[in-house]
Image (tube, rainbow, N blue to C red; front, side, top):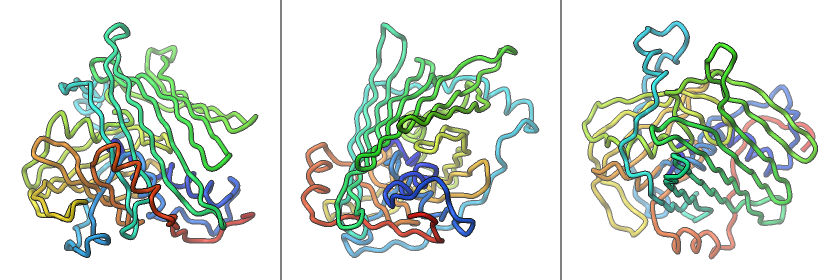
Length: 334
């Protein structure tokens, strides 16, 4: 569940591509919260779960998290100093996860994350493979986002490569951490689709977290106490912008799982604040050790469950149903 990182820029691109929409959007277009959440969910299995639909079980409404003040150059010196330090993760760098996605009680895709230590290069490589079966007209196509990111042994983000495939259309992304003349790091982002190539630079700090930050932080230091709050800036998967992530622990609760049984898990509210404004909310359920086992993105009713490779790949392909994602607003040149 590397995701939960797992819902905004990605959702926008993902949905536009699935609809065959060009980059030109009408003035009445509004990026709905549900799209933002979806993007999140995709990487992040990140992401959020609740099997309300498949099992017929419901959970009480979750409270809205309090917006937090984005990190900026006007923050206090201590906070800025912390952002210049690598995360210093203590978890085993070698791990693997599989998650299956559900919408409306039907399996529609899966997420596979692997983390591998390379001693020779003194780095840890994370690979994320996100697959969703969707409807495009009368066809059923696969939308796939594959990402590979690298971090130093101290948790410092080094860069990433990604490829988004929507039917026959492929868009490639690359992010590299470089150093400015004044010694400050920056993130250079490159996007290429066909012959079109675009680049931009973003301010960066060594303490900013990478694409699997949510899974990492909960594995590294589980949140189990009600009222516990954790927040940090991270690179958001799919959209590749620096966002402010906030986790708020609600304590233990009983929730239904993919097996049909209920389990007592730790519920954590997950909130993403985007630099241009806007907040995306979702929910994560973990075991006591911080292992994410379920997520829920309410904006698009997307649920994910931690499972194994056989179940994750078999369920979505065993149904003749494709997910139809809701879109608000009007779109020019469909």
